[in-house]
Image 1: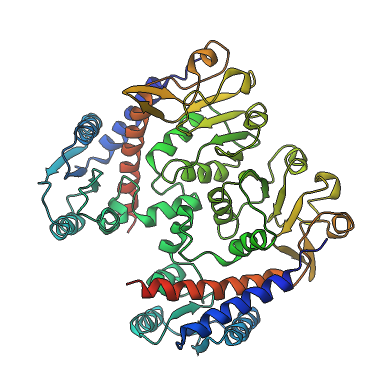
Image 2: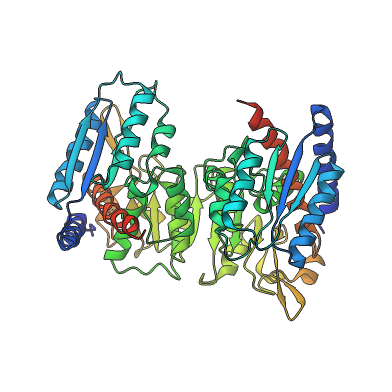
Length: 278
Length: 278
């Protein structure tokens, strides 16, 4: 059974739009694009599309690639001060002559919808759910929310290790009282854990890693990301064989991105609330 | 078999002392004490004792409890600027009229040997081992180091949830390639996990939680902290019954503190290196 991500994303967008319409404010997302690679342009256009869909005023400042670090830092400071700029989003990657961490950490953390500022990242460990969340792990949690899956008492196996997706996800699972098994490529007998798990989350970038015989008939399977080899996309999960069974499973292409952007919009709403608290 | 923490601590102190003597510098640890409760005084005296043992110049500024937040922040700024102050340590807790987070986050992160600054805390997730570590989880890792236990391929069960000890510890385990099972008070059949584990770490504040029948004959047992009920100390682990067996186990009172302070000194050395990099 495929988890209907389109429905989840649609519900999220409608909810966000409603909330934004109720605020009766002009909320502005200021995006800054420095590097013109095609992925960045595609990401920005997706963000614009959905921001505008939920009635956010999306502004893009397209800077020249030769801009100095100082000038870019100056821009950030300007937007930090500008009360019309509700949120700031710097599209990564930046050209190599610019120190990315320095740029990100200059953004006012309350305007950092991308959740890249160190201060925001740390807060995830405290599970302060009024605060901003990293977008990709947040959508995984959102799925459980929509499936009415209470994680308390549940056994969740996570396969893979990465700083941006995986570690915050583990922190979020733990904070939700899930018993969490963290496996990696050096784990012996991974199937012994996946077989008894209520949920298996794959973020290993290892094509075809999870097969049907490794799970039980009720395991919910979440495949976080794919690997591209010779322009072909490979998933960690053997989708076809698992999908033919009764297990709930996330579908292939499209959905990851949709929910990640939806969670970006959800952060936007939270950032607005946080800013108005003081 | 009891893990000989005294030997580990002694080796650590000697190593640190040697390294400090080699630098031929006068390295100063500036401690700030605001609240005069008896635990804080005891902690400070322990830190002084071991700092002086490893040839660190330990200075204590004992402030009045009525000091304003502003005045305390002023003090921190002073020590941040002072090139003779290598490290700053604010003994917690602070009186309730002072915002602890604000004080801690004003300390130059490179002088923050206690690892309480948000920026330092976040770095643990990146497992940058040239950087500072939180002291309590660090000694747990230090034990594995001294026991020649390579965590790759190993199965480690951690019981309990806390922000300061537990979550950084899980991050450190994961970073060391351990397969890590994170259990909490709502985990079903905890013994199924502990029974197959190479290492069990208890930080649950739940007296007598781990019994001999829950582990296998080779499991290494680490008990991180104790609970005090009516002035009596209780441990998560049933020490006597496990110690009569062949399992390696950390002993009761004394050792936690000794290794935590030793790791503080180890952070001190790292902080010196980090400061000299720029």
